[in-house]
Image (cartoon, rainbow, N blue to C red; front, side, top):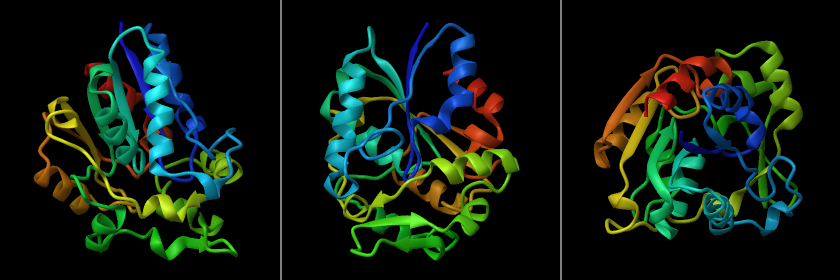
Length: 237
């Protein structure tokens, strides 16, 4: 049996993995889906978080596992799992990026986003009054994140989504070939993704090749729209 650590993306929380958590546990695996600071049920103030604090939260969770984990990151969570793996590569058996940011050393979200002309995220962002955080307009959620999802899942997301730190999204990735680079990587691409275009996903993998690429014909959120298929792919690893 394996231990999976599932890391959510921006604005989300560990709650978004609930279908996949159940499916993996049915097969006897240990599954952890933590809330990053200021997300989900975590009460950390949003203006005090950073990618460093996100990565530290995941690193702390991995240290509780009895074995090296399969570390899965969705969207922004790709940055987080890379940073956490760089901190303690000995606790990671495999990195899995699900429609996620796969960035090299020194890159930022802005570097990737500026090249992604197919993304619809920026058109739906609403800054806070002080400019420290961003939310996604509720009337744009389905179009951006949940195109293939049920109305019930979109309603759940609308209730549970929170703000994302603007400052955190501007931080640079810091990884090395000796630590993060030695861990096997898998990329799960989502071809109907409107938050991160398939062209952008494939460009990242071209720059930083992975051991395996798995294709899902889904929107940005296969944990909602195709959980059985996503769980099957994770189990195959």
